[in-house]
Image 1 (spheres, rainbow, N blue to C red):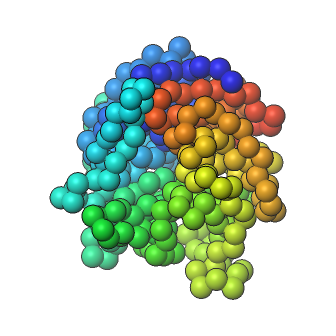
Image 2: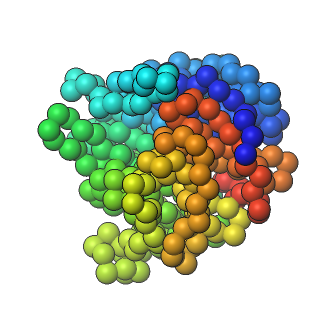
Image 3: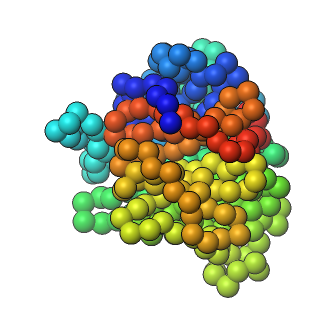
Amino acid sequence: MTHFASGLLMPEGPIAQPDGGLILVEVLGGRLSRLGADGARTTLADLGGGPNGAAIGPDGRIYVCNNGGFEKMILPNGDLLPLEAPLDTPPGTIQVVDPASGAFDTLYASTEAAPFWGPNDLVFDKTGGFWFTDFGRDRGAARMRGGLYYAKADGSDIRLAAGPLDGANGVGLSPDGGTLYVALTYEAHLLRYRLSAPGMIDKTASTAPDGHSIVGRAGPGQFLDSLAVDSTGRICCASPGQGAILIFPPEGGTPQQIETGDFLTTNICFGGTDRRKAFITLGSSGKVICIDWDVPGLPLAFG
């Protein structure tokens, strides 16, 4: 486990770059950032709100799930903790960023037809559509639940695929693209959805009304956050609480665990020349660390 970068305002959504660096979001900084191979940070775009997940789309632009924003608390040791958004915080959005200029637009905003609260994470399939999770939002004593959405990258169509779900967070696809995984933070369940076509859940594959089955769950005191899949099909999920990466076998069962030293471990991606380097974002301490992985990570649809 080696140090890669520090001084970040709750890093999330890492995207490995060919030069050995990263593109990632800083949730509590409201920005999309680039880290060089030496870990040095530059700002790509000041997005505002709470950028939470990021992925490269078929047009080479960076698609960002923005949850709308959090308040933050500074802990006695200087670490950060996100807090409930103020009641007047508007719902989040899906934003698209030009990595060359930093210019960005809102691709999807919450509407009566697609009423999401806090977009959290996203993954593109090979056809150029993308799945994204809506984490939901606390509003005082009320909990607004989210769900799982499928949308087109050109902004022409968005629909709720499964929901309501409470705390829907990490999302990823299996190596063959036929299975979608969704992590539920509070229940600490990793869900499996079999797909019948791009953007379509096979609801006959399970007895659950929305078609899901459970791959596994985190242990006591652990939650689930964002995830990545490696080339063997294992689902590698960040786990806040005790602070770890949990490695679930695709057939289900008890996950392996790699402790990270930060209770707010948020995400993982694979990079390096052979995709055997795992970049792990540590939200509270504002760091990125690296671990040599035993197999290559799964290539993403558009890099």
